[in-house]
Length: 134
Image 1 (cartoon, rainbow, N blue to C red):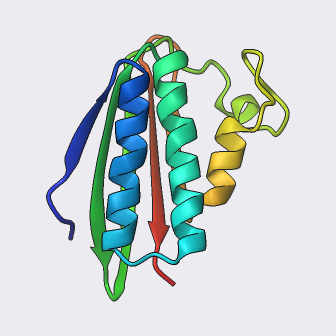
Image 2: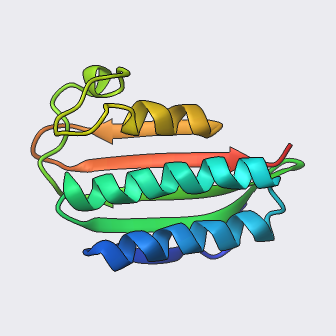
């Protein structure tokens, strides 16, 4: 069960900012702790940036979700970029396809409760993250 979703277009830096703001608002609405809000917002910011930089732009769809007695925030980042040739390698700490520190995807995965990455060369990338209330 979930609330109506909000879609944010990520085609420029302002889309990254809007994605972060929307996730923050949903995290507050869901009553995540301040620490969990910070973790979720950090992960969402990194994934929105990846959507723009590596995917050439895309969307974030975010919503409050309910699973039994749990409530949380789910955000789905999707692009139609070149895709990730080796997902396992991309999730390895220290590996980078650019000039970063190599902590983007693996760091984002550690910050949230549920993390699903779906990607292949030529079909883009979709990353779904969820942070649940405690």
